[in-house]
Image (cartoon, rainbow, N blue to C red; front, side, top):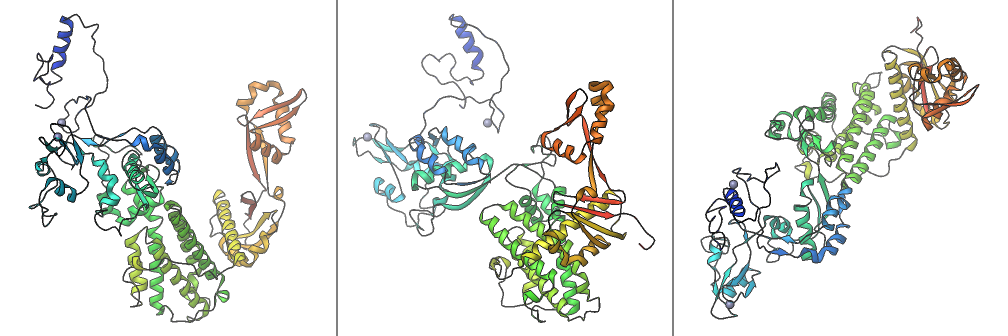
Length: 629
Ligand SMILES: [Zn+2]
Ligand SMILES: [Zn+2]
């Protein structure tokens, strides 16, 4: 029976016992024969059957191997051709695995599985490996069945295959019988690229090696990634795949490994019910799938709110107004690119850039970068372009409903949304299909039935306006800084302010931004814009000692330390601190160093201003509220 001691010479006393029950008897036997040196109990880990929880026993047994070690150099060299994502897997996990390569234990003593095609003579040990059904029928003398795939006529699995035997051609008296082993199922996984096409027996034109791309989780390093690679190199002198995206593991919302015992398993189907399949796809694209990720319906919903929701809002904004105005693609003339309003030119240039970026990222298998470019674009589209263009769609400010500004805006938003539909198709295929249906199929009959049959967008290539792109980027940057300055001073954007001063030593900024002065005044809600070059007029640093830290060290000399910091150049001291993590002060007794832990840096704004800046630019809002405001 399973797991019992066999009746072999010397083991008669234990024969038939379950191996664990035999432990005590074996100790007894050794003791009685004076062979036992020492015995004690100690705690250690032990393997158990994953199905029935009974203890397992490892023991040496004969097995069939593929001598992969003989091809180790080729396996290692070919690995260097693979484009691994993340890159470190190639030299790290996978490279190390190949460096420490052992022969591949191919056979399993099981019933189910691909039978090992080795027939051996019981008498003279002559053996033969059968490479195809044709070889099998030729060797065995059996008639080839009319239909190999009709299990009634032929079945290549156990037990039927084991009935196929024939006389040994070597000794003439023995019989060739199949060895009892089956092949490790991992071999089947590695055989997938050719086995799926029944290559080399059929479909030679369909089989291609290497594949462009595969993806699986990081635990497949020694599994599928290896078996594909080994068979690719051994059989075809080639890598099996050019690129591999290695996924991290999916954990629960707190980042803990999901387990039945902890009860923290998040059922993906439940999440799909709640958020939709595209939200789940998007979540895993935008949060780098190459790293371990946290997973819950809440996290997926949040990711969707950052992308699918604004996308949906943009679509409904467009359809509502287009329907109200009776606008259709091509229904109103649109001026040539150079003659269109700046905001329209800007979003179209932004779109061209997005298409180029998404293409480049996808061609480089950088899914997350691609998804993040889409997300950033959508933010620009909804929070800048549409928000700034609303009035034109409403046809306010006296512009006639069919004026060029309005026609250009419709055409621009339509071009943006239909291009975006194709760019998001690989990420959120269902949402893309709905957009395609609403925006494209509803308008024309001569278009592909599905967005997934459309061509990938290619930017027209003849639209250029670098000054506009850099200018608008600078305007957006100024607005972000201005809003942050208002925030820290609790000044709501709807409160008009007298002026903003833009402080920068970069002289090229002003001519880039000035064409959009009106837009900037509007966004910052200020009456005037001034420019200045000297930042110290608006903000400076003060470096102060932290008394509890410096007091014990300097004692009575503290006032001297404080004075040295107060009278020194605060900006220079702050810069020194940032560079070297310490500042030096001159005291009567000589120079002393203060560490970053011993001082604090304060940013002091000129009274009456709210400031926020980056390395190049400082935005200083006048905060004084006059009756006119
Ligand atoms: Zn078991
Ligand atoms: Zn023989």
